[in-house]
Length: 286
Image (cartoon, rainbow, N blue to C red; front, side, top):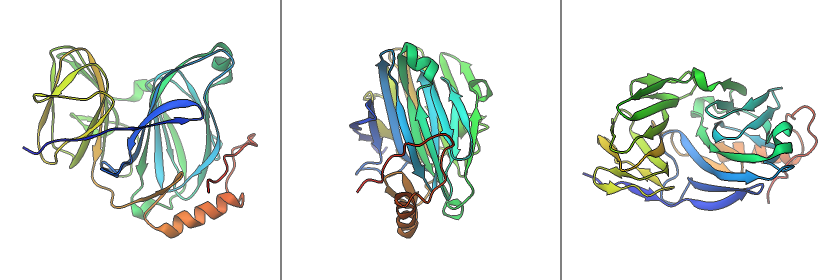
């Protein structure tokens, strides 16, 4: 049996919010269509403060935001204006060009509070990189759940564990939120060629080997794996079919460097769709 690969996330901040970022890394550029994985660590905002990410652009990907605590307001150049609550899926497909804003809603900003969640990027298939942008909000109660024998699985996107999410993914995908009671076990089938797990909290074993908390553990291809909970634990699994080589430059993802060069020039020249009512924009990094 091949040994799993463990990836230590990089520590960083996004507009003051602490994050861990295991993807992309030198050891692993992608897992299935997933090319970017940010764990927004649990963070307490004092009254009058909150997350605020001004207008910024994307191409060639879909972003998926999934919260455990707190709320975010999503606004984009398509006219979307949506409050995202814990358990919801905020799904934006950038395609040829989109801009968006992410911030703590004003009503919550006044009182302060916690924010904790995940944001991932899924690369679009090369044939769809220049598709029209779109946005869909999926409420928490629209996602399929399996709950039994001490294991609760919520399928965020794609297919897996005999569940299918309504999220409109563009390629074979696995993304699930899993909570296990102490002593429970879960078999992870090999139905997707690439899979990785990220332990958010608690203690668990992958067969007989402890899983390191807050590290991305890449599972060997083609092998049935078993997770055993040593305590109450919470983790997510990502995976799917490999998407092929992708370039990532700032917020742009593409299979062709020319597409990134064009996007950088357009954003720098302010030749980009804008978010209604927003005047601040994040400058193109050098």
